[in-house]
Length: 485
Image (tube, rainbow, N blue to C red; front, side, top):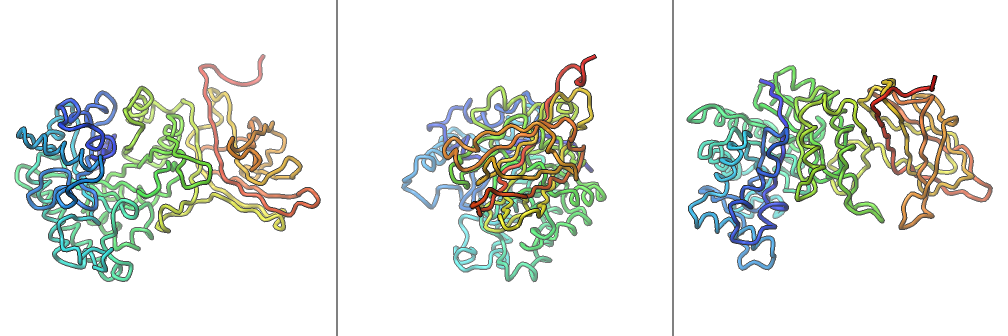
């Protein structure tokens, strides 16, 4: 049965067990839950594993840190000592969080990365030439961990984290084995679902973090469409873990439709970043509340059942608490300022990624060719409360003497007021931001197409340009906007 949820995920490490000095105080141990209490978050999901160990005292798997002592890393030493300091006081670190979440009125799900497993025969691991889930011992081990989580702890359910690979764990199958062993992976999910739903004490729920497209899932042996048809999962979360940049244009319409046809929930992932360090002269920059609202609005327009986020700037402050409160109700963000931006291709995913439309390289010799960049926005731009709409393009190797044609849904924006500024302070000579203040030509609610073309360059200049960024700002006010009368 579909269920509305607002979910916050904690990976147990970066903003939790890695940072507190041992012995961890109870107030610090509770902080992973307490920091989101009082917002709209009704579900706390805890990542109980990395690729090499578990963050609780498992009786069937290896606890993180057991195999890397003595430690040479401060975070690793802290995580081990913090867990041991709780255990020495008779406190199970996982039970402590579950109980705290329930005290704060939140459901608790334990999330397990399927591609990583500490304590197993290393020869089974893909990175050592093994075949992962082809080995029955690996499937049995991961099933045993999930069974322990679902039956020995008072969780509402478990989450199968397949999307951690690449970047957060190995895959579960080699590319050569993926097609043949797809039915084996489906049987694994089927068996886990049966176990969770028939556990002693009452049925639990099962979710899965998967990839945004059919092709990406099939490529790794995940037949998500069969999972949906058979009702093997209660919810799915589409994402690519390796690239933390927010994408409000993630192509998940197919997933929402097929999941809802089978009464299964879809929770859209709001990744935390605006930019990463994979571009020259750029560093990690967190998404602003206006960016999160824009992506959330797009996902609500697709019909998702809730939103899922994590890794917000820590310690969480007023802006983060406001974001987590707004995410619970689409009405709260309907007439609020939004900052849409388009995701770029990334090398971080090692090719395991879905289509991105930026950057767009336009050779000087390719004059008058129109390059299309599709995007969506959820706002009704004809709403009289909309005070301004700005379209901003970041273009490198652009000079003011260029003739650069920009069209929105087939209409030229040449008559709109355009302002220019340097693209970056580090290398101001690299290009320009073109900011169009849209009055006559505005994007439409839903799908849009931006077209760009280079029609003329100054004599003696034969280099091309690159459209690096596309952003749309929608700003609201309390009174109607329009001509004064």
